Length: 257
Image (cartoon, rainbow, N blue to C red; front, side, top):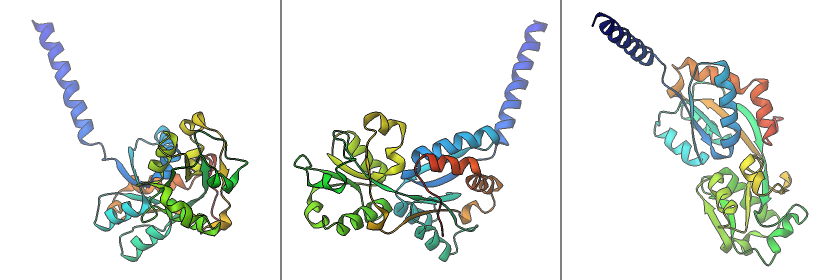
């Protein structure tokens, strides 16, 4: 009985210690992130977690929708937008707590699960097999807006607009074309380079940047994250060589501005 009581005491001591440790653990750093970052940011967080005992939780969506949520004081610590203009607008409202960091420039590609479009280029949109085209919703997704700009540049927008299948964000647009719900899509290079997409189709056509305004992407600590040292620690990590290397791997170039 005495030994049994000692075991119970040790077990209860462990439970109390474990609960106490959990009670003092800092809440996760919540990152409102553009959905083109899905694979790049997940990879960066994995590397970051090997170095720091800080939990980072990304919430992916379209930059415009995330900006609306942040404007209504959604409790995100960091905002990583596919268009630097959204963090700039947040700063103009006095709702940021750091300088805006330009972490990369995104690129658009034409991608199809069924066909190799690399050599076709923009002529892919003229093919008889194209009946549905996936793009992100241009009303609030930067990649969708640039897709429209590019198609207009090539004189294709008016004819192709009735064929659009619009995703709420660029990840959903990529999902439409990767599942065959659309024959062709204009998606982010960062998603085309992901292992899941490369397994389906390695080939893509890189749309010339001259056909649309730049996709300069920016990150900022929000006013909600101002009192969170962990948020600043992760922001600093985003500026380091390890994170920059991962951004490059997924097709993001470094801004020259």
